[in-house]
Image (cartoon, rainbow, N blue to C red; front, side, top):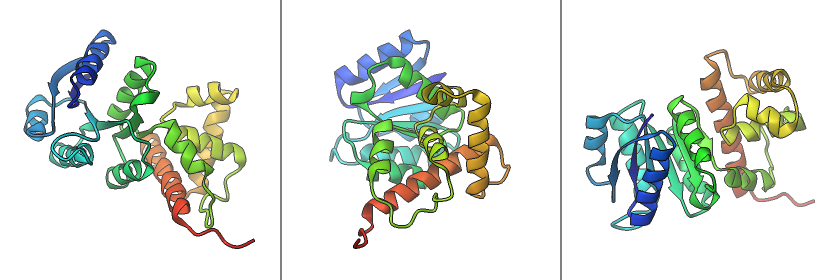
Length: 226
């Protein structure tokens, strides 16, 4: 697995690169900002670019802009955005524009380097990975119009864990159910959301995107009077 790390913080950048190398990830380059990132990606062809969301010169959304530039210029490159900020709008902006091979994780939640390594591998395989904290926040908000209303409670749980980037086996371990039962729930979710048989990975991404769109839309809806 080949990655490029982009972060303006010396400690964060070098610490992350060292931990990834120790975990068997080939870190091709380290950058302090997004300038010249696209030519570097074109030359090195990494599997994944790991990038901070707020960098010079404005410290706003340079990471998101750079992520979009990379994925437009070099299709097939996955991008994992790391952030110190719990901003659901940033995560939604990313996956709405690029629903495959994109991830958004919170730095403070990365207490185990293998969580990051697993996310990198999933992104390279074409999946979407969203931090569980963001998923939980979206789930906790009231829904006025719910296109997922046909799902059972268990199917909603499975879909939420899909949004976190968990594999079927990991979902089964979390919910204490068998892999076969997870597969049954996933298949049912696909069917209820009208997702045809276009490949398991593609349907997983579409299901997650449907879930995130619904949750984000619900967060801005005005609750009806009881």
